Length: 83
Image 1 (cartoon, rainbow, N blue to C red):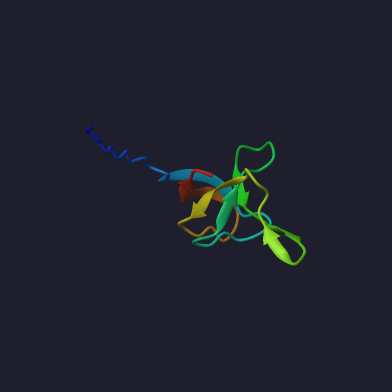
Image 2 (image 1 turned 135 degrees about the vertical axis):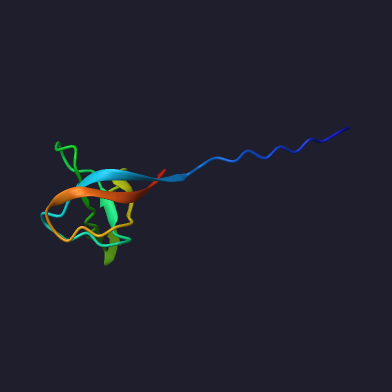
């Protein structure tokens, strides 16, 4: 009997430029970004707290900001991740 081992590689993260706004909070490098309701522009993800632990809303995380955006709206580089 012959056993053949195959390894498949799959990309799970990629960088992309996305539209982002920092209306309520500044966005720094390594900040988690999330979708924004109805505008087509991402925003800083704000976790909620349950029993003293902080969680991000499941399914809303886009990725990590790789560039800062101190205020206003603009395009920044983000590390997108499959979650």
